[in-house]
Length: 143
Image (cartoon, rainbow, N blue to C red):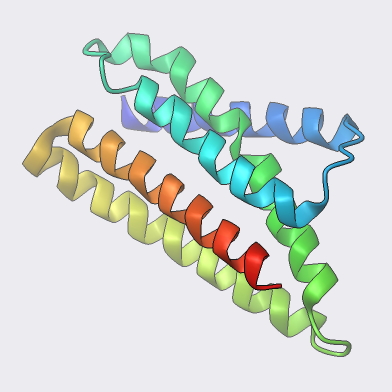
């Protein structure tokens, strides 16, 4: 069911991106990022008590709705803070980090599911999102 759940998450991401793009959020971008990252952890934690793979389908859509807004905030922050003349390089590094993280996370997720089960993998994914939120919060305070 992995490919189906990833597809549903992608649909949720598209819907979340459309919704976020249509909103007029007044909160400054640096404050949005830690919140977006922390919100990503919530549907991942909601996966923990679910034992039926079919019951994961709606959770995959909900989890996906938070991905595009979080990545949009990251892109907007990169465009804001990249030094003049270095925007392309900054986006290249940002994209490389995101794609490497997604690829590595998916690979590690498969290994984790085999060794500690789906609940362990979802729990660690939620922990990673919360860690990202804490890092984003600490960076915001440093600026």
